Figure 1 (cartoon, rainbow, N blue to C red):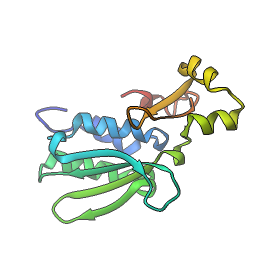
Figure 2 (cartoon, rainbow, N blue to C red; figure 1 turned 120 degrees about the horizontal axis):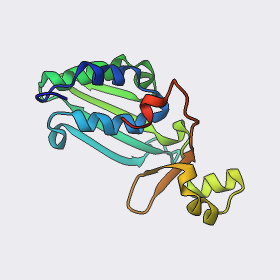
Figure 3 (cartoon, rainbow, N blue to C red; figure 1 turned 45 degrees about the horizontal axis):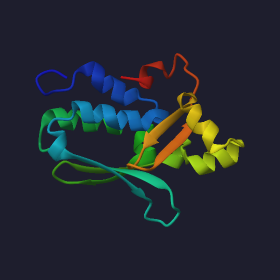
Figure 4 (cartoon, one colour; figure 1 turned 180 degrees about the vertical axis):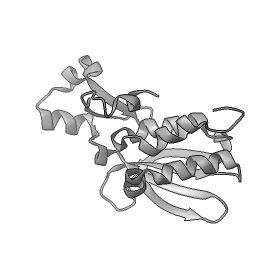
Length: 158
């Protein structure tokens, strides 16, 4: 980011970001979004369809700032982000996304342990062997760490 505008390399990263790391992408966008305290709202909730899935609701409002509009353009050129999370656009630079954690392999610790045959005690003692997202003060979701390859190395940490 330079003078409040995203750099070309940052926009290219957004365009090619591995959807498997979508929650890192949201954090990255937050780090380069101009006026993120006003123009960006992200919150965790439960899907509105009654399936009990955990959803990150993301609202982006460009405020007419061309740098934010460039970020939106890059985000929408990422086909998988568009397919798996883009919900709505409204005139004036308002965009809504919904990313369901279960679609990316995350589960509650109870579900994860049941599926893998682990005890919760093992899961928390070996927490560095897994990827975690905190969706509230008391609730975390977990998934197995995806092996690092040349294709996904740039998305692990920006």
